[in-house]
Amino acid sequence: QVRLVESGGGLVQAGGSLRLSCAASGRIFRIGAMDWYRQAPGKQRELVAASTSGGSTNYADSAKGRFTISRDNAKNTVYLQMNSLKPEDTAVYYCRSTVDTTGFRYFEHWGQGTLVTVSS
Image (cartoon, rainbow, N blue to C red; front, side, top):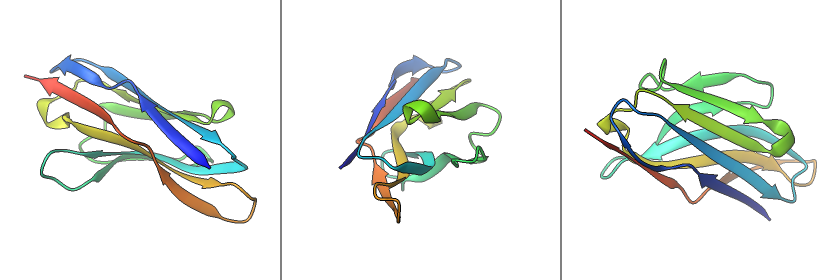
């Protein structure tokens, strides 16, 4: 059983910063991708930032220059540093990871989400 637990969400004024964390725990052989998605009210879930075990990263256009994804592989944790936040960044932020628990295959796992609210 693999569990992803996000933390760090909250209420912040426009222009402020937040740092989200997502820790993976359980029976983990290896972790592949660790990504951040978000879902705003009435909208579809969208990719914000992605990272691979090899260190590659990718960002949505809306996140480029403001958000930074990073990982601590020793702690099975991914972070999302969010700067210059805007009201349109308000959403539930979800951690997604691909985890191999047996050495044979990766499976997708999602966290429960953490709410980020940016006030104008």
